[in-house]
Amino acid sequence: MKIRIAKFIADSGITSRRGAEQMIADGRVIVNGMVATTPVMFVDDTDEILVDGKKVEPRTDTVLYAFNKPVGTVTTTHDPRGRNTIYDILPREYRNLRYVGRLDFNTSGLLLLTNDGLFARKLTQPSANIPRVYLVDVDGNNMSKLDKARRGVTIDGIHYRPMEIKVMPDKRLRVTVTEGKKNEIRIVLKYCGLPVRKLHRIMYGPISVKNIPTGKIVKLDEKTIDELIKTYL
Image (cartoon, rainbow, N blue to C red; front, side):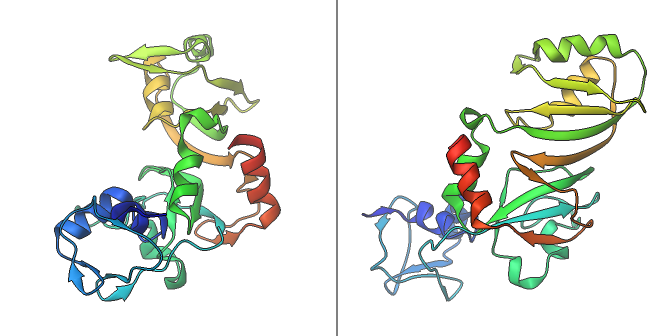
């Protein structure tokens, strides 16, 4: 079955669909010896597709990795501000992997990466309701204000789903979200009068970062992939 070339490139794990569209606009994509001029042309496995002279292979068996992202790295392939990206610290053999969602510059912890762009998108869709668990240090001690976050709030016209929040003995918060909106924990807790000082993701669905050292990446087994698909997708 033929699909749009931008989707074909994204599903191969090289980049996002938007990134593929930009590659096409920049004249970096060749299809059967001709420069691709539009992201909506249709291709399949029988077409020869090159990006920067390198053949794009069709999506193969899905592989999933867990990476313990350190603070001070950007979840992107290139940062116009010159900051370190996750690919600057990942070993070279992992640099074609697609990240699943994002962790911001000052957030550490579990980040999933995969060779399967379609799988990555499914894992980040709000409809999947995959729980993401974070440990959060906040400024302030009026924990009664957290009831707003537990009920769900609308801030600047954007609705945030209810969060599951447990106050730990050391006043650290264990926060579980299922939607994955950009900076949602920082935005909602600031709204509650408890601005985030430190944010660390410890779980994504059944996957834990517990035994993975900071900056290290671990391949997950097929059983884990099957569990994610069966439970959430």
